[in-house]
Amino acid sequence: MNSMLKPLSMIFNEKSGFHATNNDQIYEQLMRYWTDLGFEIQVFDIASEMSIQALIEKVHLRHLNHDNQGVIVVAGGDGTLNSVANYLLHQTIPLAILPLGTFNYVARVLNIPLDILEAAKLVVEGKPKAVHVAKINDAIYLNNASLGLYPLFIKKRELYNQKLGRLPLHAYTSGLDVLIRDRKELKLEIEVDGVNYAVKTPLLFLGNNQLQLKEMNLNIAKTAEEGRVAGVVLARTDKLSIFKTLIQLVRGKLDQAADVYSFSADHVRIRSHQKKMTVAIDGEIIQLDSPLDIHVERNALTLMVPQ
Image 1 (cartoon, rainbow, N blue to C red):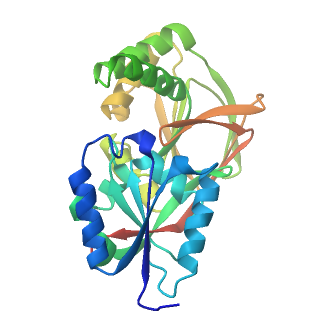
Image 2: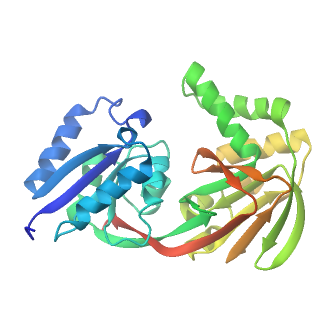
Image 3: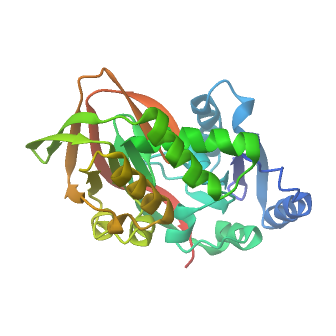
């Protein structure tokens, strides 16, 4: 192999709106910029393969076949980054982020520029940094995972967004809709570092991104930074209290909600009488087998960050 050849694979999700932003000019600039730096570029759409795992295996093999393993670029939001990173833990090939999401918490916590062209420069001007990744069964969460009302709230919010467009009002409307139609109480047994607690709660929230937790003013932000499981549980189950808590969650002020209790641990296990549990992970809704085993894999993912 030519030791000077540097592969660059850019992975994006067309459904997430990568080209919908009409930034064709920026796209051309990216291609010219990386080509001039000696990269051999291939672009991969997540939807082009039968599964994301098959796509990542193809991309990973491409890089392993070069002397210089290059860099994998993920263009999208935190959900797209999650789907790619899930198959690239503990690998030597670094990931670079082009932040195209709504919140871009991973990019922001690592001081990655939100300007696309500036972020693209980190492919060569940045340095690799290993970051912590939380795991819940076989899935990972870079920002958060939650059970109870929050997954239902996300589903309702997306329905409102699809029908009426993305408006901040929909966060509040969908929260009220969930309370009226879908309010549920979870009966869980939560094992925190070997100690069991019987819990009735409408909402359990787990965080891995210290920036997001700080913006919620939660004192467990330091826990996430240290590479431990960080979580909060809502104790109140009446409709008014739950609605106020959802609003505070949307506003990033969960600390101001009544009867919210935080915890931190090296290992958490959540048991339920249900065989499957609905979990929201970095904004995506999935079904996971019970019990849920949660821990943090420290320094598991290598990302390109500013020097």
